[in-house]
Length: 355
Image (cartoon, rainbow, N blue to C red; front, side, top):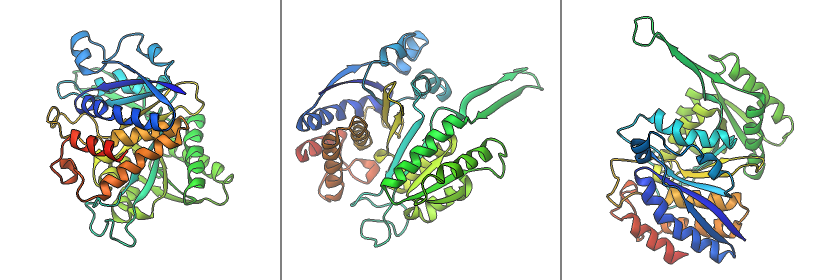
């Protein structure tokens, strides 16, 4: 089996980590008896600065026929984030109905959390949870507008949109994942303050939960959930949350497990009608662009999630094993975000040897 994978390295360190990770994905695929054929698209902020568009007008049409998409990062210090996100990443997620954003957070052996008492030597310090974030609507639905711009009575309206279809899709995906894990879902909302959309969300959680009688459901407001991810992260298993809340909680999850450089993610089209997209959570990191020290592990782990989505389990498992072995090895190279002095190339070379 040969898979046609689109790559969009994008901006900043996205270009560096995608270039570094691609040979490892090829090697894992080859060992698993499949192959990857890459199609690279040099879209991003440099293109925007030259042409006024993050991608060409037919960009989505060109992506639609690929088996999956590997994205590096989007963002540039000279362009507002709402321009870059709305010009590339968000149109892909929405047009391809990538309703499910799945973001695992794992404290690997050999990595120490900045939280006191959480490390690989702790008896009860295992942090291993996954956030299911609604990915196409909610607070990022882009419904609203501005009027009387520049005048004292200027007004901006930003509306959150929750549909039964979108909410049920993410909630059901979370419960299905919980069945495969520890049978526990934490539903995170703010229904005490948002009495329409979030209350409907809670009601849908109750309806879906009735179909999964063996799954325990915990309910937390987003402020309490943020606190508890710092106070007791080891007690979480599967978290389900809206677009904005999931975005915030996954950044907390990434840092309590050691580094944003270890955080992968998947944007999944549930029906398989469009390609799904895989990307590291960390962003374009312009402060370290060009220094050769970006952590490629989040991109490698995103590649493992890509293989899982394609049902190429052997390829996914080999990447996971290599990363786990490297992080557990005190002599292995580490990038500065993990307290080391290694380069991106050092980490990749070591992973290749382990593969």
